[in-house]
Amino acid sequence: MRQWILCWLALWPAFALAQPVDTAAFVESYAREHAFSGTVLVERNGRVEYERSFDMADRAFAVANTPDTRYWIASITKLFTATLVMQLVDEGLVDLDAPIRAYLPDYAGEGREATVRQLLNHTSGIANFDTVADAATALRDGIPAYQLPHTSDDLLRRYASGKLLHAPGTTFDYNNGDYVILGKIIERVAGLPFEQALSRRILEPLKLADTGMLRQGEILPRLAKTYFVREDDGTLVNDLPVYPENWYAAGGMYSTARDLRVFADALYGGRLIGKQGLKSMLAPGLDDYGFGVWSYESKIAGKPHRVAKRPGRIMGAQAQLYRLLDDEVTVVILANVGNVDLDEFVARIGRVVVSGKPER
Image 1 (tube, rainbow, N blue to C red):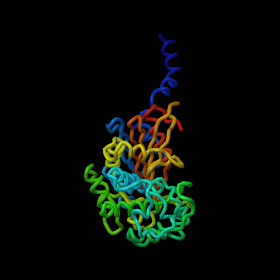
Image 2 (image 1 turned 90 degrees about the vertical axis):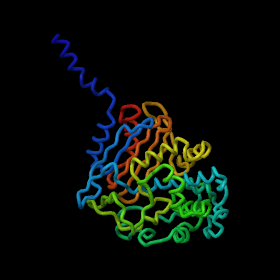
Image 3 (image 1 turned 60 degrees about the vertical axis):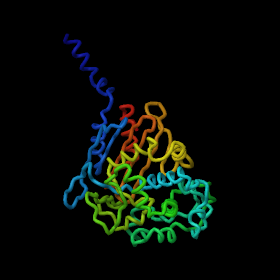
């Protein structure tokens, strides 16, 4: 008997390591090791399997992040914008292959012949107006397009009507200007300001009460403050003062992890756009980019799994909306400190949920 016990004890470490990794244990270990600040939500087959918030929404007053905390979702906004466009396509009001000039006849940029499809997949060829490439430059020179107030008409004229750098359809060039133009097309076709179109077509039907557009002049309850890490000395500092509405249809929204989970279920479940529209949205183009979302296959435990991934980042605000399409798994990560590689974090969570293994 004693020999059997000793043998079992000798094998126990290997046996323990072979067990599936618990999602909660992995997330909490990773969050602790990387000083993550924000909220993580994991859903499988329509049921929330994990939800927890970490660290502070406001460091000055020691206010904790909670599942009800609202975060700036940055470029996840583009997926909402792409969804609005595809709704108008479904209704026969927008043609994916029609040029910008068909909807904005007064558009003055050289890219007026670029199509709606090319705006959606960032192949319009229109010059990118976001030229600040790193935090050091932003700290030294500011962020010119975002630190003075602009209307959406100003944004279109000043920052999204530049020269044509590439022949439309030939080069992937991620550009907020493409989605500024799409926002104005939505306004023109729907006959409503972008915010109202968003509310009537997506937010109200889905009862997304904690989602909307940010404005510098409004105090929004439960909105997390954002912080970034200086590259020169590693200190944590307040984000630069900006007008968030200047990101408009490209990045000006806030939400909660819970609301984004509902949005993802409705979108990928075919309740916001039709089957063909969703297929078009998820068809990977250049750089594996579809319409407002990256779409690709990822190997998990040696098997291919289709992924739809929409990240976002503006200074310290970071966000991930990650969907394993064939597994009905959604992972939402919203952060208010820009110190963690959320691309790695969200991918590893997805692998843990599907295979029980957090392999890199």
